[in-house]
Length: 88
Length: 392
Image (cartoon, rainbow over all chains, first blue to last red; front, side, top):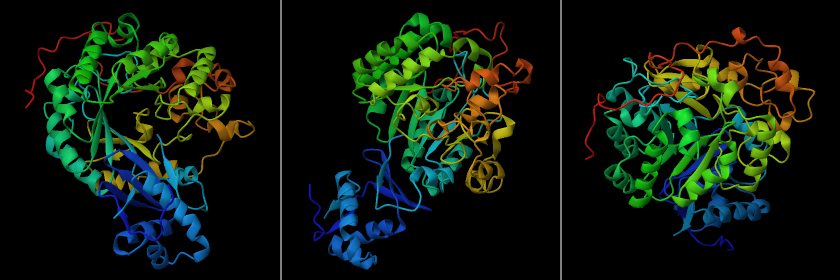
C-alpha cells in the first residue's frame, strides 16, 4: 500500500519506544513484535507524527532534508504495515 | 528472535550495535525458583530443591518495578518449575499490570483445566511447555517417569481452553533428533509453535552432555531440517551451525551480557542462562542500585560488550558465520573462550576437546539437585508436600 505523506499519523497506542544508542527499540504489546528504528532522526520523526498535521510536516519539523523524504516515506510505510504507526 | 529493521542506511549494522550492548536486555530470563517436581538430567540450573535465599514476593515485585522502568517489555520466566512458587500467579498478574509481559516455561505440573482457562483470558502471557521426546519412552528417560503424560495433559488443556498459539520447547539430543517431525506434529496438533533449542553442557548437563549431545551427522541433518522450516523457533541457539551454509534466521551472535541475561532465584545476575557459574556472575539484584546498575555498570557485562578476539578461529573463513559459537558450551567443556565451539561443524572443537582432561572442566558447583540416591537418574517425585494455591 502506498504511504500518503499528506495524511496525519500517530504512534499506535499499544506501541512503546525505548531509546537506544542507535535509535530506538519498538515493542508492540498487541502483536508482541519487536522491531528497531535505526536512526535517531527516524525516532524524532515518529515521535513528532502525533503533533503534526501530516507525515510530511513531521519530516520537515525533524529537519529531514527533502532529498531524503522518499527514503523516510518508505520507512514510515513499513512502520504503518507493521502497525507501529496508524493513520489518524 | 525475529526482528524488523526500519530506517535508511546507518553507520553500523544492527548486529554491530547489539554487540556493544543495549540500554536494557531484550531477552531476559528470570528463574523464579530452584524447586522442581522433576529432576531432568540435562537441567541447566541443576534444579530440584528450593533455595531458602530465594527472592521474596516483595523483592520479586521490586525487580518487576525495575524492569518496567528500564522498559524490558517481557521476561522469560523459568526455574526450576516456576508455577510451584505459591505466589507465581500474583507475580504474573503484577508483571502484566506493570507492562512486563510474561513468557513462562513449565513442565505442565500445575496446568489443569481451570488454570488453562484463566491463562486463555490473560493478555501478555505466553506459555511454553517443555518436552524432550515425542514419545513417553524417549522423553521420560531424560525428564522422569510420567513427565510426558503430564506435559501432554497440559497441552490438551491449553488447546481446549482456546489459549491460542502456545509454545512447545524441546532440547535436541542424540536420542530425540530422529523425532523432530513427530515433535512438529504434536505442536501442529495443538495449534502450538515448536521451539527447538541446543543442549548446553551446563548444570546437570555438564555430566550428561557427552551421552546426550547430537553427533556431527545429526547436527547436519538438524541444520537442513531447520532451514526447511523457518516457522520453527530456535531462540537463535544454533548459530554455530550457520557455518554449514546460509545463516539460520535470527541474530547470529552470542547475546550474553549484550542483549541477554539471567536473574536466578536468589537474585544473582548472570551473563546468560547457560553460564550459572561464579565466573559469569555480575552481582545480585539485592545490592544497591539493583538490576539496573548491574546491567549498566557491572565490569563483567561491560567486558562482554567489548569486541572479542577471534583467537584460534581468526584464520577460519567461517568465523563471520558462526562467531566462534557458544561461550557457555566452550566454558563448561574446558575450552578457551576465544577458540572453537566444542560442536564446531568443521570439527575444530572435537580436536580441542580431545586435549582437555575431564577434571580440567570447570566445576558447576553443588547446584540444587536433590540429595536422593542415584541423583543423576530421572526421578518422578509426587507433589504432596508442595503448597497448592487454589486458582482464583
